[in-house]
Image (cartoon, rainbow, N blue to C red; front, side):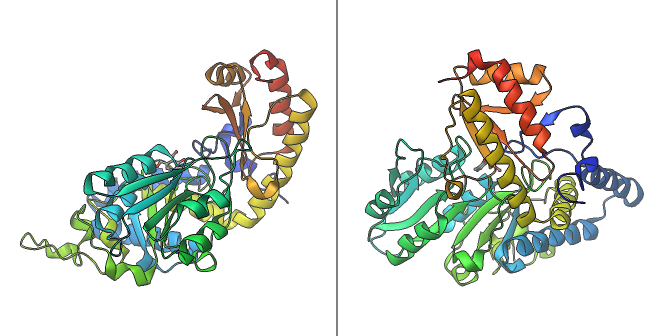
Length: 381
Ligand SMILES: Cc1ncc(COP(=O)(O)O)c(C=O)c1O
């Protein structure tokens, strides 16, 4: 059986709602529910099974590594993108004369805020704004990235408008200029295959909450192996130590691996859930999901055109991912009106965000178009 019929029955929510809010949080599967139940069972039966917890955290690390085509030593298991990126920037020292971080205007607030926090340490920050067509032009990126640039922060798919960055080209530009790249893939991981070797990217952050079908509180930071020896975070914790069981209070000796970007006790319940979510995406296939979602979003765009709705996301399939943003006069009003019709969407920046995953169907697209048409008084033209 093909997508979505092969897996819809694993998501009870789909029996009573049209779910297009995976850019906020993926739908709950029976598999992830069972993983949470297993966590409680293990707690009940084993008390405080520390060895099991450490083993589970290791499994999450392996799953993240497999997902990105990285090695487990290149992965930090964190509680959020914020925690991993903060730790990274606390230790990242740019070569002499490279005092600038370039960031796109499509970054999530946490990236913007962590990057601007570096100004307190003397770093300059340069923003690269988008064009009216809702893309960040490569020429403007190329102008901003110069011999003073230490780091370039880009987002894979923008959380506000669904615009997809030409990651390969930005990495090429940055590397040519001698700068490193931090890629925020939270809105892409699980929806778009990511291969860190193919990309040659330096750092990638993301989490399990959205298209990896896990829950909040589990994320990763990838750091390319050859960069690890150059970075010593000052934001740290005992799970970043070279030997956590040594319980040492007399020095700071962080791990030689990407565990150096970790902090305190791992988020064990979220790890149970995250592993189940990643296993499910493994079974379903991320490439198959991307293909399926591509067909659904094409169909959606046809429907939007038919009802005269204004799509904010770029039309070019190469410049969009799993989320299509539609302009409204009142994003919260539109989301509430659709929710009354049991169509779950999310608001951002004046837009209603419609995000698509392996479990969505052509009937879901038709229901969303009919819903938008019913509430067309809230559509911005
Ligand atoms: C692109 C992007 N980056 C980062 C985040 C937030 O990361 P965290 O809360 O794990 O720090 C989100 C969450 O919605 C996001 O969409």
